[in-house]
Image 1: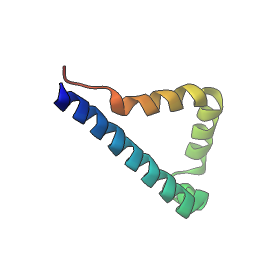
Image 2: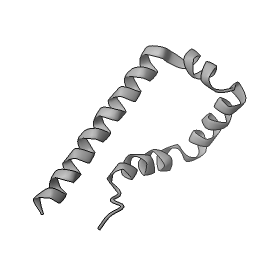
Image 3: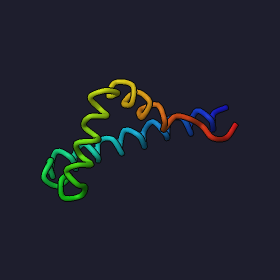
Length: 71
């Protein structure tokens, strides 16, 4: 039982670190770097998607790291 709890706590810690790193990278590099990595059409498509489904997609994306594939 303790090992499952430790695995769960580890997943939360890893998720927090990854989110913080992504946030830092996005804030430091900015939109210009994103535009260089993908096309403006692709970026516009992503923005439209998040305008329509932003709340639900963020919720699902936040829950995914906690889904356990083993029982």
